[in-house]
Length: 138
Image 1: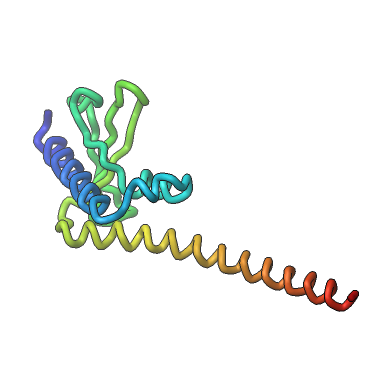
Image 2 (image 1 turned 180 degrees about the vertical axis):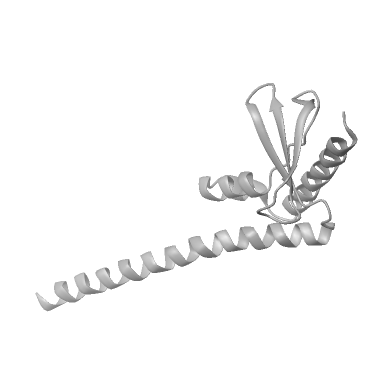
């Protein structure tokens, strides 16, 4: 395996261990009971590492993404799923990584919360009108 690929894999796998650290601080069983929170956890806090048994790392390609400064992309053939893409910020510290991931997840959660609040306001207003009509007809 080429040195740059090996370094990428080591960094990516280290990031997955940091995801495990984040997950250890929450009640994962509780959140996995709900499909929505389970999906968010699976998408933003994956823990599967890159292993040579699952990916053809000898023929993997590594790219600097010009449209996202500082990020590297690895394209590797998965023996089960075809070409798979992985991304890392190689210069990121553990603190920076965890902070970035948590901020991303919080942004997703804020978006969901705001949409739900709007829905609740609409439902509440509708319910209030129905109750007023019912009371007016007494």
